[in-house]
Length: 74
Figure 1: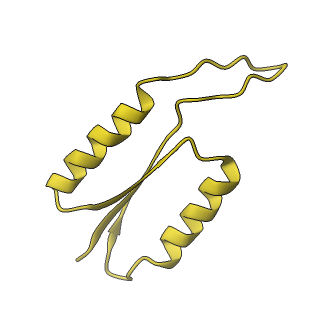
Figure 2 (figure 1 turned 30 degrees about the horizontal axis):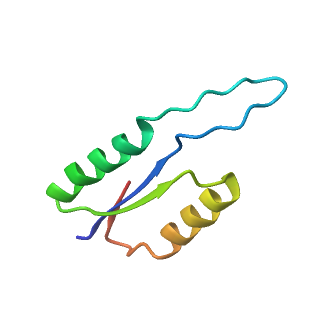
């Protein structure tokens, strides 16, 4: 069985009038650390950092479309 993981880390946010945003500098390190741990558990990992919403939706759709029917996907 193939094990796959799709990981997103967002460390930079845009401010809006209604929701002030702060950067999260540790988000990228968290993604890298999680990726390393999943790799140790035999997962094929794909990391995406600071993707836009549209990019994330496209990436998720592609990930799902390419998933073998007997794979474990997170």
